[in-house]
Length: 150
Image (cartoon, rainbow, N blue to C red):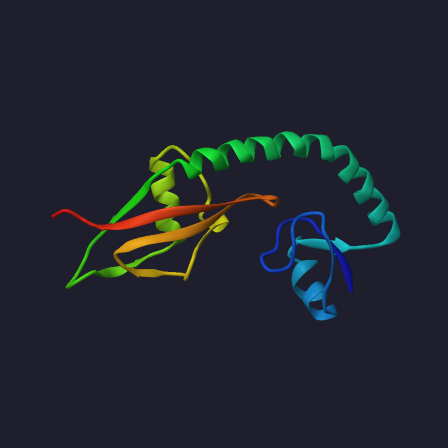
């Protein structure tokens, strides 16, 4: 089944991509959830025209995302967490904590666009997270987990 995505779907594609999925996934999940529409010939023509008109707008958006990426690369992110014996954390640090740290630094980035390398981090040290600012702009963000002062 060929579908046109109306919004980003994790692991499948981005908005306005034409994707092929199994019939049940499209009919029972994507279409009823408003995440996709059937890729008929008329829908494909409308999509092509919309993409052509949006190409100029995307250029400006990509430039803005690249400026944000440069400022993120220069940023030094430190996340404080409660520590038990040694360097083991109480709980873990994940993309939500990185998002909060970026927000305090002045960059409001949603946690769903951040993926911490290795998933949840449970020890002190230096780690990296991948931040997606646009479908074409990704940035590697180093961050450090430090012990919370009592």
